Structure formats: C-alpha cells, structure tokens
Length: 344
Length: 275
Image (cartoon, rainbow over the protein chains, first blue to last red):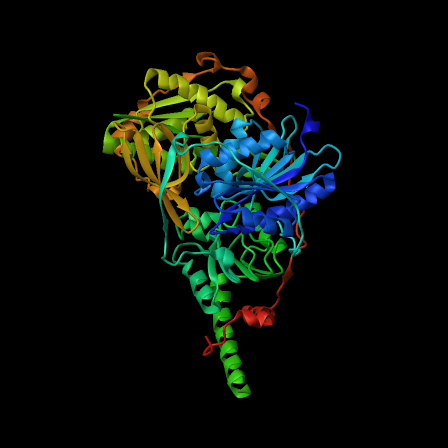
C-alpha cells in the first residue's frame, strides 16, 4: 500500500429530512482543521435521493469538494447500498482520512466499510488531531468503560477511519457564497441486489426525551441513593423548567430510562446550565457534558472528581441543599413577576 | 427449526474496575468478570425466538479460558450450546481481527448445523464500539441489521424476517433475507431471573473449546494483535480541569450564592404568568 496515493480528509455527510445533520457540519469544522494542517482538501461525501442541492451547505461549512451519489436506490439508508457507494468512492479517490458521526447510521456504515476495505476504525472519538508530516490520525476516546482516555492509531492501512461523537466538535461559522467542486458519481446497483427493504418509517409522536436540546439540565447520580431519592432531580428540573439527565450508573440501576443518560454511551449535551447532583464525575460522564455553559456540582464527597470539572460546587447533602434551592428559586421568580407587573 | 447463534463477550465490570494510576491500565483483579450486559439481551432474544419458532440457540465467544463462566451464564438464560475459541494467537485483537476470528468459528459451527440468524448485543461495556457485529455480517456476506429493538416475524420457509430498527425519532420496519445478523438494543427485552433447571444445567455444562488449530482456513496474519489495524498508542488521564469555586457557608448561604449565579442567566427562566 503506497500511502502517497491517499490524500484528503473526508466527512460522511448524513442527511435527514432534507437537511444536513448537525453532527456532519461539526465534522466539517473538525475536518477543516485537519485538512489545513495537512495542506489537503476537505471533502464531504453525500449519498441519498434528491440531495444534490445540499452541496452548497457543505461548501459554506468548509468543504472544498462534494462527492455526490444522488440515486433513487439511496432513498432510505441501508447498510448494503450506502456501503457500496462509499467503497466505490473511497477506492476511486483514495482519501487519507474518513470521519463519520457516531450516530446509529454513521456507526453502522463505518463498521461495514472498515471490514470491506479493510482498514482500522476508531469508535466514538472525542478528540481528533493529525500528524502534520505523516498524516497519521490521532483519534482519542474514553476507553475501558470510560475511566481513562486512549489515543488510537492506524499506522499500516489507509484510509484511516473514525466515528466521532455529536456535539463534541464545533461547526464553522458558515460563509455564504463559499464555493467548491462538485463531483457527481453513481453506481449501478439494482433494487434486487439489496437484501433489505425499508417497509415503513414510523415517527413516534409521543413526546420524546431530547435532553441534547435543553438549555437547562438537572442530572442526578448514584449519590441520590435510590429511585425514590432520584425524584429530587425531577422536582428541581420541573421547578427550573429544565430537562432531567442521569449518569450511567443510574440508568443501569433502572431509575430512569436510557434517553436521559449523559456521557460517552449516552447523549452529549451542551446546555447553558448543567447541574450534576450526586454524580461523582467519571471521565465517561465528563466528556458528555464538559462543554456546558455553566456547570454546577452538588456532592457530599469533597474529593469527587466532579468538583474539578465544574464552575461552582457545593459540598453538601443534596437532600438538604436542593429543597432550599427550589424554595429560594420560586421566591425569586415571584419577586421577578411582581417587578415585571410593576413595569407595565 | 431455527439455529440461532448469539455472539457474546466476557467483560470486566467497568463500573467497579480501578485503574492503575502508574501504568494507566485496567487492574482486572479489582473487577469481577461478567457477561457483557448488552449480550444478555441478545441471548434472551435468541431464547425467546427459539420458544416462538422452535430450534436451538448456540452462543459463541472469544476470550481466555475463564470466559467459560460467561457461557454458563448464557446456558442459564436458556442457550443450548456454547462455543469458546481461546488461543494466545487471538490476544490483542481489535474489532477487525475479532470479527475475523469469530467468523472462522461461525463457519465451523455452520458446517455442523447451518445458522439462520446471528444476534449480537449493541456493544460491549469495556470496548464500547458496537463494530464487531456488523463486521461479522460483512465477512459472512449477510445483511447486518443494527439498532434492532423488536423482532416482528421470522419466516424461515420463505427466507425472510422483519424487525424494527430504532431511529432517533421513531423506528423503521425493515425486511431482510435470511440468514442475517442483528445487533439488538437493551430495550428489546427484559432478562428475567433464570429458571432453576437452567441453573442446574449450566453448572454441569461444558462448552466446546477450540483453539486456532481447530478452525479451518485461518490466515494467522489476520488474528490478534498482528491482524489489528488499530493500536492503542497511549493511554492517558485527561488534563484535570482547573476546578470550580466551592461555595462556602451553611446550606442556606450556599444556595443564596448559587441562586445569584444562576439568575445571571435570567433569560433562561420563564417568569410565571408570562408563559
């Protein structure tokens, strides 16, 4: 394998309901940094049906090249069809690096592509860097259950591939009118060649928990002692108008469902205020919330690592502190209301 | 009659494990080895499908000899047969080398009794990748179906099955030809306490144990550390954040300070009566 044949940084662009998924824009931001360091192009690869118009968005967010496979067979994501397009493109244009969002689609696709190429694949990366001289991708992630970070390399194969967590990298500010090169490709793939069919897509209308969109998150951990104790978190969240988050332990203990889990194997969140209550602060949790605007920790144990990751901390008993907080907050809001009425 | 194989892994309980701060490695002595929790759901689903359609459930794992214990746990859940591939030449495998070794074992299992369906857990709690399942599917050239949270139907006579794949805002109903590979979410089922007869059976059960030499057409270069494109170059503790300001005083005073801090972001809070 001659590594000189492999150049450029690619991002697999995920499309959803006619728009580019936020994680793909974040990866274009991260990819731009890697490409600039290597002095190479940043490309996006977009696969779907009626998606060609999204190329402009890719350019505005930093891509130099858009590889596009716009064919009816790509209407719904299927591993087998998307994989064929990606393999086709990768074998033809030979990128040095391919990044995918660590979403269910990105992970599914990357795992299949890595096996067929074959090449190495690092999962759920939270930090990316590249060696300027060699082009070696340094993909770091929490490892061993999230107790520590590991940097993973793929020295002997190209392209190097990684899936990257959502909301960890930053998208660039879009530059309207920024242009790039569109390369339209297609593959001859017949419907009968594909062994899976999407029969139906069912949107669940019930109010889904989307803690990644909340401005305020009140998260609780094992320190609350029991499922009953965890109700304190719900009370504070309700009082502040925030969403409920949880540590991995709490979810595994069954106190709350997985959609509330913050961290490496849960959701990455960036609210304006994050409360960590009774959460010790394992690395796998911290990577999921460290970019929050204001982090407040309440914990009985003064040695808990969460106090190193917070902006403000209270060493104390949540069952004592939180009820006072709820009460004082409500009083403050009532005063606010009075002053508001007074202004009118 | 279906032959379902669940691929499982024995893992250290990462909730309990301690890191050796000098070497930055896991101190495995500090944590008990358990059946990967996600895999318990894979085995449970296989057992439920066996009860629904008839057939048998085999479990397959790669690991050191003590991994027999994880297989016994699967027998407790209701699996019929267990296979352990164990050999120093498998050691240090990343996801690509792992899927290669497991595929060679699946080839051998299939020769004895053709496999209709393979089920994997979503991921392991020590590796956290979820890459081995789809890797096996690609190597066997069968469709991989990830994020499965329901099996709707299996029709072996007509050679297809239907599942629900979880999406961010709902699910999709997918039909696939058989054989295929599922990787299943935890929400697909609940694993009940094992019935007593299964526990007795598990206590006596001895799994099939194979080394590399028991497998056929194995390219040694694709095994273990040698066959792994990815390597861990360094393991490190992230630089400690500077740490926050601890609020002093009695609880009431602490809360007063906290409140004035969060109320600086007043725009986030809805004033009552306005909403």
